[in-house]
Length: 185
Image 1 (cartoon, rainbow, N blue to C red):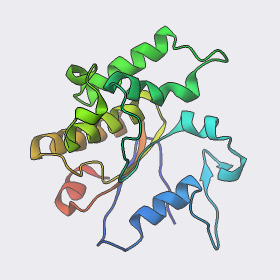
Image 2 (tube, one colour):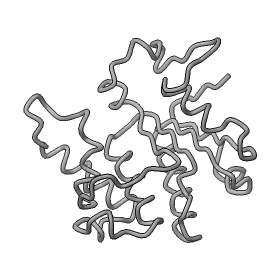
Image 3 (tube, rainbow, N blue to C red):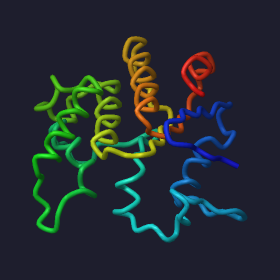
């Protein structure tokens, strides 16, 4: 069983193959459940439309390939998709959310670079920024510090702790037991 409260930072740790990523997939509805149910904000997961769920839950998966090289800013703007109006153009609130996400994930200086020119760690931070641009109430992070150097790894953990302090319920999958013990509730 998993319950995540507003403002809570929960860490899931365990060896490779123990089901950490499968748990996240189940929470997102992409893994079939043999028993049990998933609820988001008290509503069964299957009663959520994808767009509505994307306004509530931000996700950073373990791996993601760059299929279409965009600029970093364009990639982070994709996090606002669920918030766009019927004509799809970004509003001032969307542009502000993107700028804040770029800043918080320490990728603002990379905003005009193409994603296919980024290092693995830079790409990982861009993916965190994209999830932050959603302004989610819950955040699911599957090993978000993979490919990061020590400095940026610590900055991601500090950022995630701060986000939880601001009321975002966060579920973090990690292999870093010491960091989980230090930052998670």
